Amino acid sequence: ALYGALPDQLRDPDSFASRLRHLLDLRRRYRIYESRQIAVPAVQAPGLLVMVHALPDGLGTEVTALNFGADAVDEVVRLEGIAPGSLQELLAGEMLGAFDASGDLRIQLAPRQGRAYLIQ
Image (cartoon, rainbow, N blue to C red; front, side, top):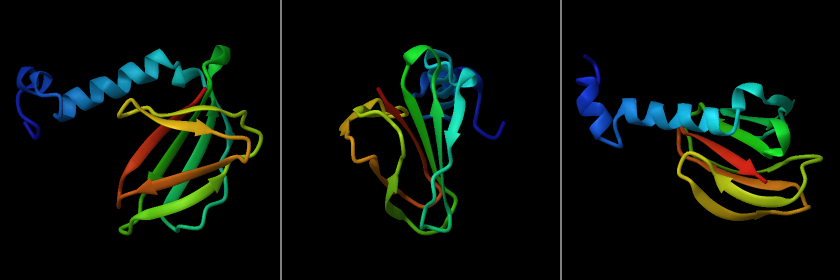
């Protein structure tokens, strides 16, 4: 009742149910449920949490960045030991360029926003 009827939500790509379906599809496609957490890097912003996961069978590395704070975050986070590769924002499906050998990932988040990155 909070978000409206399910059939109506599934017709609206911006609805809660449609966004949840998209998240579950990504979880299945990249087998995130089989991933292994390999790092929780140090960060400066008090509301920022970054978690790094090795995906199974060479699917790459997934990085979850969550801003629990009331202020926007713009921070470079060092990801140690992650191989260079293409960088994609998973939720939007947007290619962001390359993750290079420096190991630095710039994270920009609005208050209470999260992003999931794929390095392949």
